[in-house]
Length: 637
Image (tube, rainbow, N blue to C red; front, side):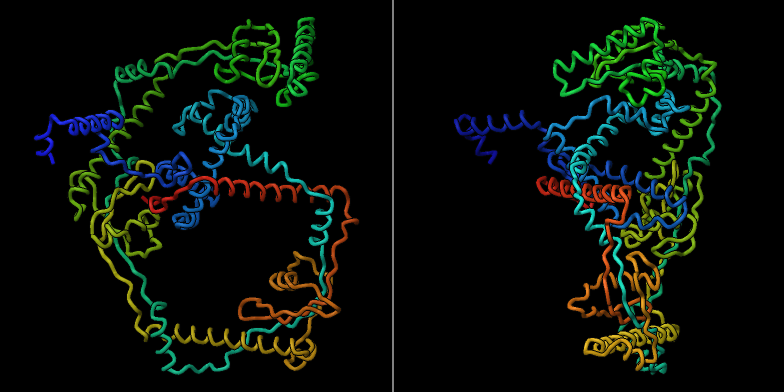
């Protein structure tokens, strides 16, 4: 082909081909022809994607919440099940669908809502008021910036906005409340006979039966597969690092990061809010402005700002505090509000200031000037930061070196251990559910039984088991799962056969008696023949635990007696016990006997339930109309 082009390089055809190629490079970049575009997303939702990193971060947060809920105890290996990860991924997809719907429908979150949401978070408050320093400190400890956190709050509010609006439209009528209360307070009368677990009809089990059962269920009598691991443990907290820096090093850090030690000017403010009423038209604006100007004149005429705020402010959050907003930084309020506040002198009151919330009259009560902390003041902090960063640096270097060495020598841990001055340690044998020591960590157990480690006999990737703490493992010993000798499990096999026989006998006996019950025999007749007692229950409620919660649940699932004939049912109670049940009467609750408070509580319960159902239907409809592609195989990568 190239020879053909060389031979015809002056032809019109070749010139056209070259023009097309050049245009292709200019539009797409020559690198697009050589660099593969690899998709690593776990889901694509409409025009956006959920990356593996986003899913891992969300899953990590979810795991931490679950560990906290369990008090740091208990087995959390269930969190690594595919169905758990799939459920979390679907939740993230629903959230992304809602955000895309917001963009299409023009739903916007006002900056004031974000600000008020942040101001109301208790973790950022000191003595009941928002503390800017605490806010920044907590965010920094989580590796977040204020702008990044504000975006998170924005997205959270945005995801809730449409569902809240839809659920708020739920309407429950009085007739629906009556129907619910009739069912909720319903009472039922019934008779029953309890059939206890039978004794084994044939306790003698032949050896031939034992052998046949063992052969048919060999998979149930296997020794568990077990492994023992060799491992290298690199723990950053145990590294020996020179943590005593020269003053010159600390002074260099101080000068480099001096902006961190500058406290911005803060202003102690109060305000009175006058919201614009009606539909927010010109007349409504004029009326609100006139009221705000009147408030300004009252204060400048001698009335105490706090007293006027308690009487006239529309801001419920600060009204009872006399309009007190506490100390405010720049960037913490609406731009117009901030401009007016920082233009005031101490003790001055502003003219009415218009924001998206309405008109504000602002009082500047005090000013806290900005301050630069000296080197000597921050030296202890700098020394601690230096020590931490040095440990982090040394750990990162060693962790990187560990990774390189274990990859370069995949069949042994000794070279890495020798180079890093570490010891190759060994675990006790354990199964797929984990064991003791590092084997109690689900990630270690998972790696131990992975294809690369167990089958290919390679070193594992570095496994993070804590902050600045990794291990690399390899198989030291592997004991496959094998059938247990029949002689060792004969007793267990006999026990299994006996249990199954009893279960079968109990079921057949119960079904035979229920067949007689359906053919016209009464409960009393069956009870007399079986030398059993007929029990009677009257006025039993839906949530009753007596005589048996499973029995009550089954009774309330039975159809009402029709044409004067009772309903009949065979109920399995568990543990190879059954009950023959006869439902005699159903008495609905009487809503007219309940007070208004109970009815209102019922209305709230039903409205919340209906609202939630409507919201789920809405999200489901959005998802059906959005192109969603899931890549669940990447959840574990």
